[in-house]
Amino acid sequence: MKISKEARKVSREMFRHSFTSNKLDEEKISEMVQSVIAKKPRHFVDMLKDYQRLLKLEVDKRHALIESATPLNRSLGDQIVSNLKARYGEDLTTEFRTNPELLGGLRIRVGSDVWDGSVKSRLNKFQEQLL
Figure 1: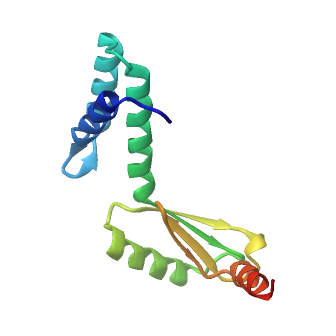
Figure 2: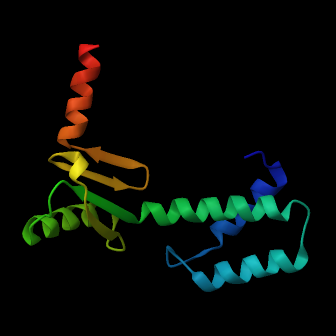
């Protein structure tokens, strides 16, 4: 997305002011968006799109997607969650999904970090080595 330096600077400034006690504050976010919409400064649409992108990245950093080929037992799931919270903080949200395409193992995604210990991933790596 091509965006002016001014719009990017303002969106980053808005993002920095979106936190209360190191957590996103929905009221502050809403107030800032409403203020920008009311004032309609130059490039305000690009500014809001970039602000939305920054907020999405922040939300993604605080959410873990844990995929497994079969449902995990409770104790293993709790152990994975406690390890992830120790690394990323107690405010991390988690989501468990069953994905039979993995064939076995786990794939964990937190923001842009991915740990892929699935059988499918190993088979794909092996196939690439053979080619």
